[in-house]
Image (cartoon, rainbow, N blue to C red):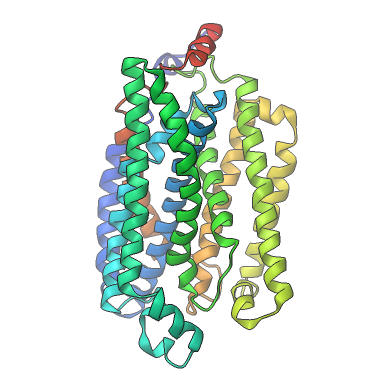
Length: 403
């Protein structure tokens, strides 16, 4: 017998108002503190870039999965397409753009603690840095690239969402064909633009270091974050409409296989990046790993190796785990926690005043603030249309079979 809760339809957007209230308060406080002075302002800038990069990872992960689904048109993505669209929507992408503006203001003023390349004294006397800042790492070109990235992502996200909702209303098959074409083009641009974007915003936190693997490595992490959160949302609500009966072992097996594939790709890119850089043994490249190999950071790195690769890898090899929604959701929850930790490892060791992996209150404040606003933006989109698209006959067949 169904419980009263199971009889209620899924409301993924019900916490949007709470997220907006919490997010506004915490984010405004964070921004005010960022423009202050002393150690509080420094810690707030560090916490803000961590929180922003974490939610950017989730946003672009959803955006990338949206493009992947429309390119491949696989059945596995149909029940969760609206979640992908909401997570990678013009609301969430636009929010990430707006929330980066305080950092951009500080880049122009030269007052940011985050990007040492904005300080002439840091660059002076280093030929490599002088070359980088003259042609690439300067406030003007940094801002131009920022605008290109976000405007292109916003345009693609708007087009995909508008096309899918229009097909729901009209049933026009040409819309699906258009999304497939633009999805393939968009997927290529996504990897190119995301690579340059994280090079600008995250890799340049340590401007003397560089890696050609960094962009793909980060994009894989983004995909893992997004698919993990999606699996959790759907598995928890599997007995409620409109998901009731749709979350079959075949479907969760597909999601589990995608998670396994991304986990293996994460392991491959991580090991490849490490081996190539470490075997080269050049100080300007190896210092990235040196900064993450002492003061407790090495222990956290080892925890990520086991927690992000070995544990989920062996779990996702097990057919039973992939066939049971809540078992898969537990693995997804674990992997989402790993993403939170990894975003911390990617950003915080870049700062000399953070010699150990102990979070500070500014980190929590920024995550709560930006995370709350992100929840509001996600909820605003997910409430606007049905959680299931109606244009694809395969989904109709799945629903008929379920009932």
